[in-house]
Length: 407
Image (tube, rainbow, N blue to C red; front, side, top):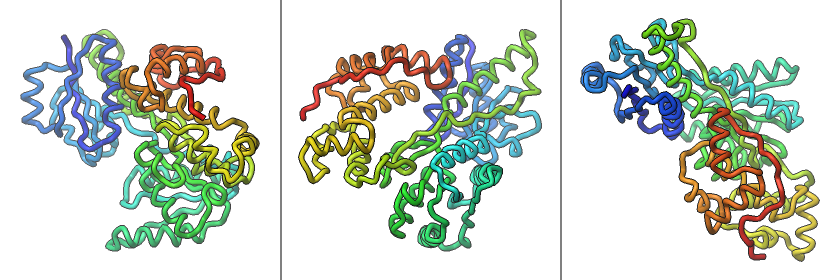
């Protein structure tokens, strides 16, 4: 059986998605993926290559700035998330299209109707941060709008100097303003600065990050909207490049040399409270909506959300529907459905395990709810999303409840 050696990036939270994408393509071709949890070096790779006789290798570069491409000798290697300038001429590489991500962020923020925009780079100088900032500013100015860019403070001040500079930058922004941060961690720091400067988010400042890293995005105040990169698609592309090179070497296909560098871009935007507000200025409705988005999958009930209003349940229901267009229960169900879809599309979590992560008491309750809401089973949804490389059509959506919410 043919094999591919996959060198896993250490400490990368997105490594599993990339690996899953590579394994999908390899499995379809009848190829085994052997994961190696260490950085490749010439001696170690020679031993592995002698044992496995691989078709090639995939290297998830992660935070490696200058990977050792020479370590692979004549064995084809694809550098996943690598930078072409750091590799020998002709080396195969799959990299994040930072410019496409920045343009997607620009479109998202321009839809807020704001006329002023800003970009905050990563705390440490990074090539991808510079690329995102340049492309974002260019997209904004192309549309005749204004974009201000934050300059990093002088080195040596550490986290305190960075947060101080952020507060100064946020304080001086032209409001209302749509702000794009280089990644989720940076965007979370912007939200802290806005809170200390008493800048209302998203009414005065809409904040958007990159990576859609749930442990960050779901725990900020308010929750953070983020551009979601196609990490799984990156893994698929890397595996396809190796298989194409193998076919070309055996005379069964055209050479992959003209297409040695490929990119992966954004899948879309996960919208949360940092970029969108209720249709009317009802603070209680805004608080309830934020609570639902944050806690719907942790057992929140409609009566819990209604308790945030200082009025009767009937009046609370009317106020919330007027502000959002949905009832409490409909909003809770929408949040749970969104979580279920994302877990199906982005993870290999067993279907029976999804219920605990989506706010349902049993897997059968989730199964019935999902089928009623989308017209598809969860297995069908996962298969279609993988086949299309993105999000499948949602089908019909009916008002269905997967479990009885105690009100």
